Length: 188
Image (cartoon, rainbow, N blue to C red):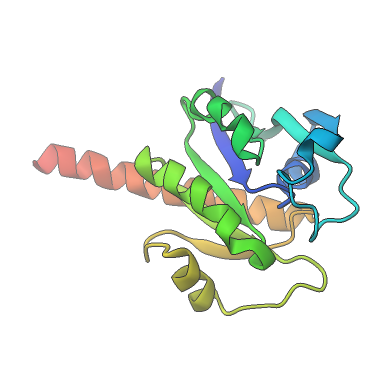
């Protein structure tokens, strides 16, 4: 039996827990806690006013790809005060999906920088929230300064097929980069 690990990351309230729950074949393990007065002025729920809980450690889900391959999903907490856990969560990961809310693109910079600084393959998944303005992919890529080789996909974190699509694109992207690195090491 082999396994692979993909990280689901992004800012506060961008849909990480929802994404893991939509695609996991098991009831996801979540570490959701009620938001308290301590989060006032720290977590900005203006675009997610119905949000009453937040992830304080991680989300965990699983997908059986085949009889001998399992994919583990780890959703990160979105707030800066919990980022100390990210180094442990990403250890051994194949890659990451960075979810973005176009109403708050600036919340994605920290996650993108984190994965770029660690040379971990990632893709950007633009979670298309109901009522949010739609942008062309090139506008989003430019606003986030995403390199051309990094996949950028529109998605709905609530939809199983949409989440599966992102995981497939992420896996293919990571495997292609791995093949390229191996070929360069052989030649060089």
